[in-house]
Length: 66
Image (cartoon, rainbow, N blue to C red):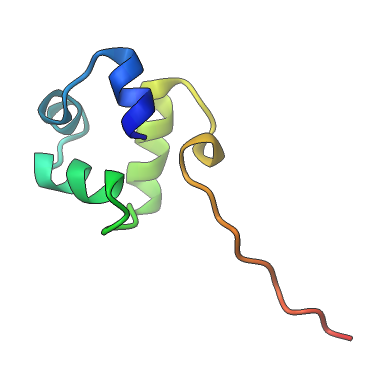
């Protein structure tokens, strides 16, 4: 997310203001200290014009039932 924000020329404070959250929330998401709620993740994707999975990677896989 940090790269997308930098490419867009948006500060953490500006992004936070656009999304209605604190700058600390943006910082925590960028440093993997906080997983955003689904609504926040969707809003972030809209701001950057990318799918959610382009911002957040999930390497979880279900157990093999075999």
